[in-house]
Length: 165
Ligand code: COA
Image (cartoon, rainbow, N blue to C red; front, side, top):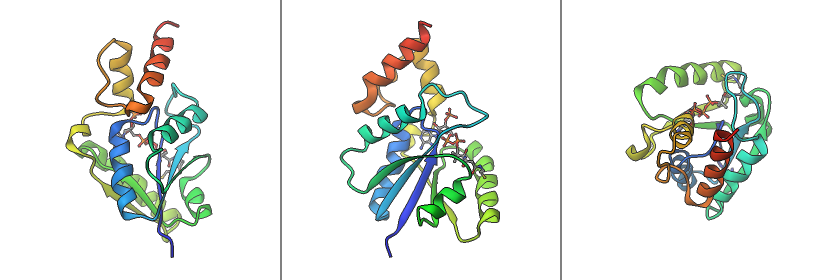
């Protein structure tokens, strides 16, 4: 049976830390579905869901076994619809743990057939997150090391547009 894994997130925007997890997963699983959450009541996104999806697609163009899909509703329901019983999440620092632990257990409670597995990104990326990168970019700091090269200029343009609003 084909091993399909779901890698969910906001990806506002995708960073090299996310890409690192995707590349590691691509070596283990037959197919990765990157699940871009459309809305999150706790976050105000800079990029629309379609923009976030396109940025990911551009960044993974050299990896063969990846699909990118936008989802709404419960992640667990989306996973089942995709015939996937595995969710992958990145763990960067200890402070990620509690949030991830609660989310994994809630997802397990919602459907015990789906398991969450965790992976550590390269240590070069353990201190970053999309918000931090946007903040540094808005304040004219260098973000080049943290955003995939294929999408860097687009991300910078969007940050500049936002800054000049
Ligand atoms: N490298 C760099 N940064 C990373 C990273 C990595 N490997 N992994 C995560 N991050 C960062 C993200 O950039 C993000 O930063 P930000 O908060 O500054 O934007 C942060 O870590 C966490 O974001 P993300 O991984 O995108 O998770 P999220 O909390 O925004 O969304 C979902 C998580 C989409 C999985 C969750 O909200 C969800 O499942 N939603 C659907 C509804 C649902 O089922 N709810 C019940 C869940 S139990």
